[in-house]
Image (cartoon, rainbow, N blue to C red; front, side, top):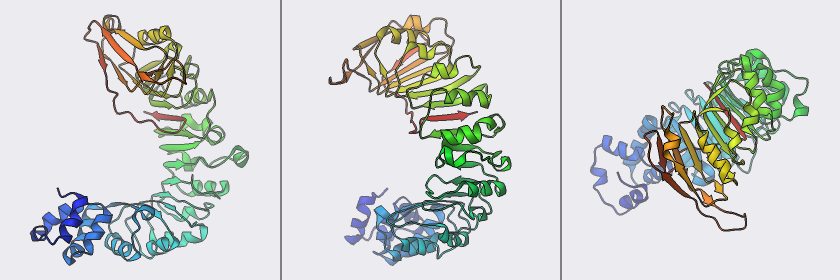
Length: 410
């Protein structure tokens, strides 16, 4: 495949080999280039200008455009939008100036379902909505950015997935109106404080089919906590902003799920206290930024445990923690700090009485006895062998979210 960095140079040096290729081959090559490179080629030869609309219609059902970084001219942007307006289904659009918005909304995108945008150096508001209604009549997913109040959002007839987190003027009354008229499956809030939502209730008909919810803890406690048991379609729950001890426990009790696909906790909160006495099995538990103690695992039914950016100060407690990995199949330790220089896993002891293999992954962990000292790599050893124990010196590719709490239900 021709590299993007060399493509324009090849054409500028008048090497004819590329232009001698048949259309179908050139289309495949062009489809592997980024938009900025494609548009540069458009200016170098009429054949590229003729083929690029076909490339975009065939390969670009989804477009990610940042005019802040790309610095496209209005002429190039117009050529691109004209080419894809009938086929585009997803658009991520970072606008640099109001003329970008005016140009975008001068076209109609009948097949666009997912529109998420942000602005730079200018702000959109409710007065700009009529143009969006006209340009994007069939939106199902909408993530606006600006001083929108939420008024008239329900006029997006097919709206199912809504993000209002970046609407600085959004009003509770307008959210209620949206939920009265639209069956929302994905809702991202994280915008209302407690004093804004006290003594209000969200209409059940608008949230009963929620599959994804992101909100502040105040929004959760006042609007959704008592309904979690009945939100049977809910698959993902993210709590942004602040989180307090006991919040996770309340959510697990209210949800009444016997099995949780995954919990991710990015806060120094005791997972043991949050789950003590609850009949709940957690398939995957990811914890970060907490004190790593043996007691944190007692009585918790977990298959996979991943610990990141955490601190363990006691070698004996860590030994106890390792010995109590009874139900676990994976333990991942990444970017953690230990106050002891090395640790030895007893393979025979860890493997006995198991029916499945315990896989322990260690990656980029360090020893530091004092915060002011330089960190040195942690040393890991294995004593003996057992078919049900394996130590891996590279951590699996596990990503962590930035939110304090994420819950993935079955």
